[in-house]
Length: 466
Figure 1: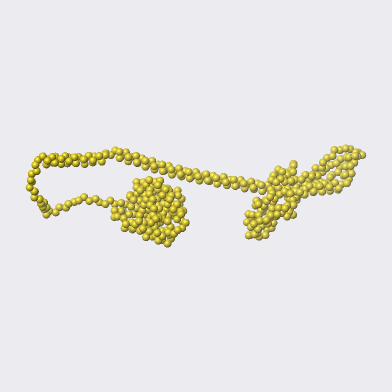
Figure 2: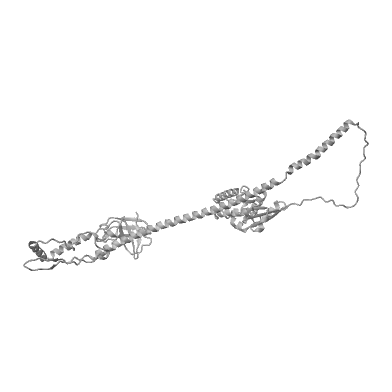
């Protein structure tokens, strides 16, 4: 059942089924239901609300009056009684009126004070329909003091009689006026509430459109950036192709050089065969072997040696990278120069911001992060950070180590798998980014007590198995 709770300046009222209900008592009603009675006196209708005045618990809608306001239905009876009393109070006036009718016919005039009109308020409580004709709100309750003058001619004499004035009940008129103004205030308050709700809806719609425009603008910037990167890659590929086309064909020249001596040797062998066939074989004494003696002088024979190339390797990441350098140095060859940069509690964006120009000299780049981004950072921030790292190391391959799962079977692993899946899809879109899957090589014992940070055993397993 719908109702309207309206708070005026001095009190609270309830509008229910086009009737006004007021609070019954001023006693303490904390944590108790409240009782509201009809605003019309001696009306048994009442409404009972719950403790927070949000729901009707019990109601009695049997009103003993119409919807015309308090005191509205007693106007006709009061007007009739006043008319009867005015006629009975002056017998001489009625006698003189009868003489006037017998002697001189005079047109009967209606008494303006004897009004039998009944004012009935409309259901919508329109201010124009609440008042009688030719009256305003300011004229309500003003007593009528009009005096009727009756004149008749009898025996050349003129008499003037004053009728009893009709005095209205000011109390009932004021009650009716207050009731009408209250209904008008209620209607205006309802209109204001409707306008506020509509304004709130328009504000929410405007905010939604603004957010959508910002999202579209960010997506457009990302696509523009990706298009520029693709254009750069295409230009580099075209330049490399043109460079390769301009180089001479070394393979054919090497083939010709190899075939030349072979042909001469074959000709020489064929001529020797011909000579052996034509000339008789002669006995040639065997030649004694020659001994080569070296002097005692010290001569250092230098052989060209190629120095091993040093590969500089760096690992960026969060707390998972701590102490990883020691295990890598034990397992990798000595030609690797290993460096680690870790930021405890760092996200992809924090790691991307920590990379400086001095870190761009490494040939092998690994990034091991994302644990602090799951269910915390937005995917837009993660994507922008990965793209930023890829742009910094555009001349070499960046390896992203996926986020390891928790040590126990918890619901968090579901979001870790979703994060790793999106990270792999992002790596496919970038030409110099690859993902390394590590979740299939870990055991439950490889994690610390908080099931989040890996132990040294896990780092050793990661280095040995991958």
